Length: 206
Length: 123
Image (cartoon, rainbow over all chains, first blue to last red; front, side, top):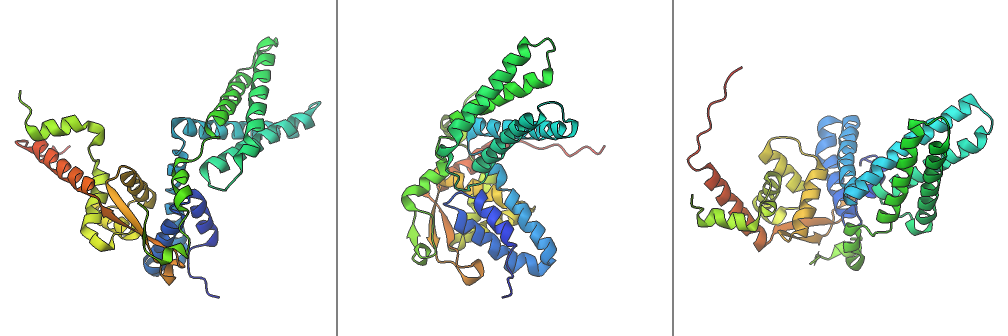
């Protein structure tokens, strides 16, 4: 079969970036533009870049869906993700006593950050309620414990101080923002996402 | 200093209710396209009227926002084979949207009244 549409992975990414209400219509519009206009004009490789660029233009909207607190959560998750990956890497390279447990904790935090980012930015249908409460409590506990231990120790480390505060902030933001239903998805609960069959007949959303 | 009726109306409506340039471009694109105003066509029309490349995300975000504010309505229509059977969403400017556009036009005309922009100084 000769598949002349945009790359499947890019279409998958676009659909995950869109709210359920827009998933079918927007993906259809971009596919139509790609097939009818862009690919014949500039060729497949550049058309793929065009498609990916437009996919990314929806990421900003996803990031801003949770309002200022949602954006702060994404920012803190990114900071913590980078720091925990760095810490895990250093532990593995330096191999001081007890490095295995510290590496495991750093990787666990990184996994929580990745899951948070996926749940917030991509509509992957993650059943948030199953994991975000214990994950948020774990982050707050770990951040607070690190902060207190650092405050009591003879050598105060600024890096640990900042990271522990970011961890506590991230945990609190998760508790505040993650339980909420996405506003744009909520609109579609009653109407349902436009399905192929439903779209066969012209209907009004209002 | 007296504020005449039109400006007073715009003032009472509030600055946050005034349409932005991009919102106006999207609403005007829908008006121009008439019955054929679906996402892709609106994107094309906006790019043409602003004479620059516009990200799809910006147009669809604006369409969503305008719909939430009640300035436009939308309906779903059957998709074509080239779209993989995916539905199209057609937009139409609501009465409130027409009024907002008319207000924006009047406000802009009032703002520009008697103003002459000095010629750009060459550096």
